[in-house]
Figure 1 (cartoon, helix red, strand yellow):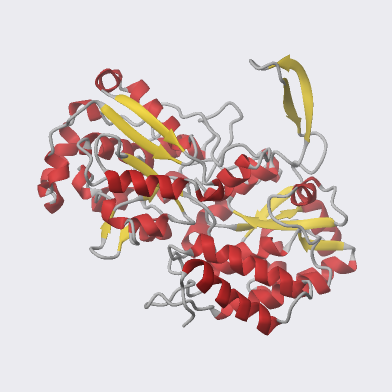
Figure 2 (spheres, helix red, strand yellow):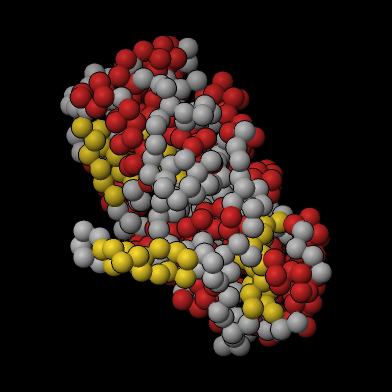
Length: 492
């Protein structure tokens, strides 16, 4: 699912993998027979491509990922298809995105080709554009060439539009990647604080207090301040929503750097939050940020912006108290469990965000030069398109993939409609009633392949301006010059 989580994990944060789940029984497809994939491919023009008919040269399936999540899905597929497992050996390559390690290694492997090249590989939302429609998109196989009847199966699964758009190669309009997890965002807020300030914790009522739009949001921030609360932990919480809701991305049609007006307004939002005391001035993925989730920050923090994964794999692990079980793991370390009877666990709810956005997600791609096209297509189908109750998405949505019973949001609206999203963390609220519609408000139109790099420069300059270290004009000028100096991208 996302470079953000993978990075946080490598830094030692106790959040678990973004989708730290143990894969369960896969869909009922049977790649070992190779019939369904190859027969379906006969009905598509792409079946004429060489990758769909290329004879296999070895029995090694190379799978490259930046977390072990999809690796687990592939392993489970093999476990439930013993005849396939008897024929193929899966070679796993997992490289964290920390310090940008994953992309260069993947790029080199794709370019080099040969027996060690990836058959299947993944890309996170922060850089998926590069692999589906950008500078590395030429390596991706079309889903049709893998034997997937894309139009029919997408019609049945009804995957969120933004996930399909990000997986579509613009040069030919072909889908080359899809994901399994929906990451449309909501506003996640403390029920007790909502009652104290607004007199209710009802999600529909709070949605009207904090939105729609940023003017309403900051009106709510003022009301919270009067009761000695902050509306968010830091300006970064607002940034993810601002970035995801902007009309344009960082680059224009000519590849020149631009600043969408909505993103430029973030300078003002950030400074307002600091000057007016609307936040605790934390940075994402720091102990101070986690403390605000636990309710132990300097001032009570009302809310965070994020998808379901932020609740499941970050907030959930920081809103209770970890206590020893008296047992030790194989390495002799104390095993702890989360005591949810203390802290803020269960005191949270979600409502519609003031603006629509998404944050994170993992897309699954296949190499156009793979000689295992039918198998790759069947595995991809199982991960991204299967809507049956035996499929990964249903089990993912209903908490059937791990011992904790962690529920999540999935790309398929069809699966969402038949799933139960009630979770204890949200006081029994069905999160799918908010996260489900949120997928329709998310857009991929503002994504570019340089987002990860440019975002880092922008956030740094905004913080310097917000803290009075430089003027607004200087921050913008330094942003443009730094992007040009570091990445060779000139301003429009």
